[in-house]
Length: 257
Image (cartoon, rainbow, N blue to C red; front, top):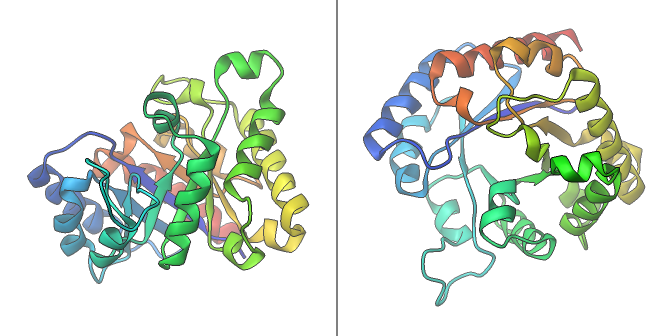
């Protein structure tokens, strides 16, 4: 049975000291959580210090991006073995902000996914449409292209080790959230794409998160949908209490299945 995975993407927020404090607060807040996989993704600068805080706890460590090469003249980038060495469990790949501002493509997403999997970490693969694409009737074609690109050449065993984050770009950081039905329909479509690639058994084993202004007020409705298996959380993950306010209904949803 697939897991509910709730990951806090801290983006470019929190100094190292602030990150250590928030990580400690999250560890304390979720100490009794058993059914939900909880992860936090601080900045690169804070990863090593936060790794010390979460070590031996039920909180997993995630990185916000990675480069696909082992080493070399790639100023400003971080390699997968650097992340692996400090204990990173998950790597967020293909976030819409990377696609929009920093030249991420389906091809580079695939390269990063392959590299992360080769070192035993779990990729969180972000996909999603812009408002113009949704309004233009391109939702399914955009998601199809992004899923097929991300999973190109991956075996079924590798696919089982991935997490997908469906994030409608128009709902990220805007306060606007897809309705429960809109989100469920998109998630079901994505699971259908995975089933076409790998069969229904594999597709049913892959957790698909919702990313797009999930917060305590709407988490229960979203997490109660049959194909929504967690969340990739932005602003609401920057305080331990609001992050817990999303994780708690996730725990309830997991216990009810």
